[in-house]
Length: 314
Image 1 (cartoon, rainbow, N blue to C red):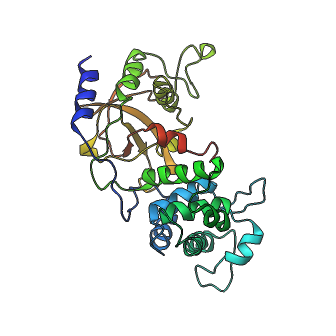
Image 2: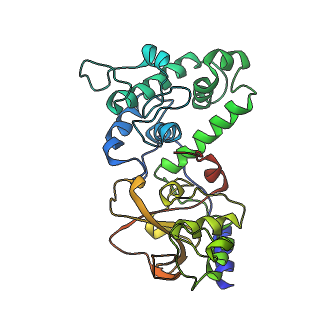
């Protein structure tokens, strides 16, 4: 009960979430092999930033350079061949424009964004929102509507990318506390002592057992937030507080590769004092464990909008 009260006391005292302006990338949020590309090309024009470009790439492909969509969109930036023919660039200067090569596709995504921003630069409203709307619906519709058009798919796309942008950005001020944190912790506390089950999501058929991400998913489900099933996708469900800014309810993550959020292999729910509740491994039970270990990757303050923004498949 004291923990629950403490969460809400902190929530009442802290203000100001992630700030605006040019956004640096959160630690490890972009796979290390692509980080320099995203950082460089994310600053190509004032309408984009590295975190926004990262959000688009994650939304499009989940960083998979080999994926093809049902609409024949290809590669890490999901260009369809006709768009690539017009807007693909030789990003690495090797003499070709390869839709499958992230060294070309990532620069091309940034270049295409900036071209769209030029098309809609005189449209009223936020130029980045208008650029994203043009990406989804076409520049003509944005110009004709005088801003983001009243198309639900387009409006949702703009909101989703702007929300995901905060998940890839390094916070510039303290991150707002989560209003749902206490409820998630309360659920996890009730599961202490439950045996671990690989792939467990707490169903009756599984004897109410969990693996690590199954526990965190179920805990936040009880407070109305639907998280992805696996830990490395849960990392993108909100902004990332620093270690000395952790609050109870934050998800804490662990990885053998501290440069790549896609390599995250474990997650727990922070409860304060350097401890989390987690489902650690086969043969163990849900318990309190310390978080300050060499494989500590970082943390996420889950938000309802952040969870909703995540793509359903990555």
